[in-house]
Length: 233
Image 1 (cartoon, rainbow, N blue to C red):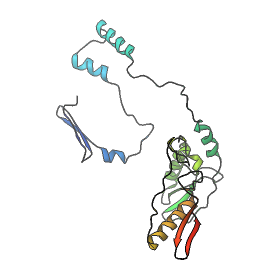
Image 2 (image 1 turned 135 degrees about the horizontal axis):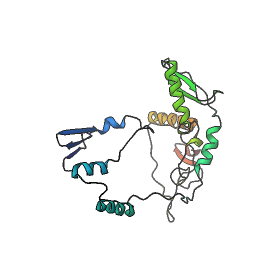
Image 3 (image 1 turned 90 degrees about the vertical axis):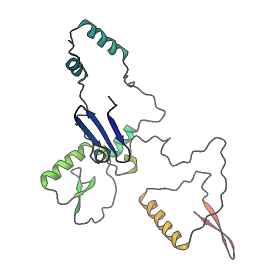
């Protein structure tokens, strides 16, 4: 089945030939379209195609026995219903956090954007286009309300993130020791830009200080002409 299939990695295309028919998929274009839950991704037509091409009768005893053997193999096993995780289930905390209204300050928007709300109390704001018709806006808000848990207003709204993957702690090896590196210096212009960027990220809560790590010291020694000065990081 794969002898007439061509995959062009650079062009991002997948070409398949079936007789005189050429089917070509553009991977880059397909990735731009959103995934819909109600879409139909596959149809099981193997039995019908086998009967049509080989002119076999499905009531034949040999075919029936072969089908039973295939079913008994169970090559596609299902996942166990109960999985034991070390971490606590993030579903419960996410359900509680998504029901609490976020505390945020709404900033002025450009003329082509406006705020909309997913609840009657107007406590869960989102940003949508301002040129939508009433019917289009209602349909959009209806879909967003159905998938409300996918929208994060607070850091606690992020679900299914294990502490072993994302946590405010630097995990070290058992015998790992912190090593002092040579102090790096930047020009005053770059230093001012970096300081403003870090301050902005700290203010909006994207990054935070790590106070329990041996790799990050709370103070640093700055050499000056008059001597050494100790400043806080």
